[in-house]
Amino acid sequence: KRTNESSKTEAMHIPRPNQQSTADDTKDIMINNEHFFGYCTEFKYLGTTFTPELNDSNYVQLRIDQASKALYAMNKNIFRQKEISSKLRLRSYNAIIVNLLLGGGGESWALNEEDRRHIKVFHHQSLRRMLNITIYNVMKQHITNKEVRVKMKSYSMEQTMELRRARWLEKISHMGSDRGPRKILVAWTTNERPRGRPQQTIRHGLASTLTDHLKLPSPKMNDWIKLASNHKEWGEHVE
Image (cartoon, rainbow, N blue to C red; front, side):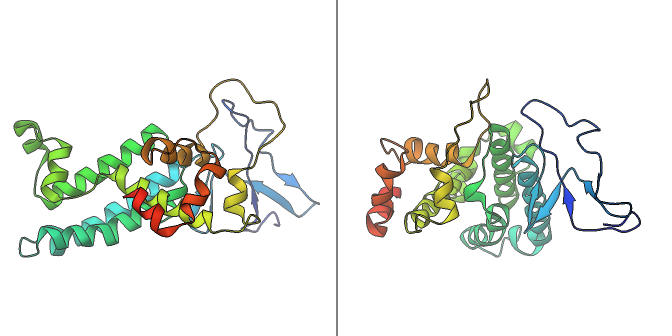
């Protein structure tokens, strides 16, 4: 872009783990006397916000904020209406609010424990709102999150996310070996691995779904892809 113009073309510096970008790292790249590339600290592409940390934390918070706004807008006329049955309110919540929360590729998020906690907190706050349970009621009557879910007949957010991932794994099983989502699951590098625990990735999340929640013996693709490609058997196993 020219020095006196704005442009969508920007660069982002990705520092090594546990390091910060320096001023020299983010210095404008001059192409000639009039044109250059500038650096940014976040970039939104197809609804997803990328940051130098290469995690989903900022995007998760953005989705929570958007879902909160929608919940607030529908609160008076739907979610707090006693004339509307709790079953119908829950269906509306799952169809609109949960889809708004997790609909931006939630099945492929690489979530850490803090991200999961924020999502669960939002979910239980929403259920309590529909039941007209205040935080004062929770503290005085010692109402647990499980009791709230049972009263509302709702899945936990963890169950909802794992179900979405199981459905995503089934879709991957039907993809050709040349498709990006399938290739990324078997991708690897010959570079030496840095010290410390590796950053949470989608492969970690899908492996956890397969072994911890679906109780499969191994997260290796050859061990689950045949089962996932059979819609009936996979559905019975997931249920």
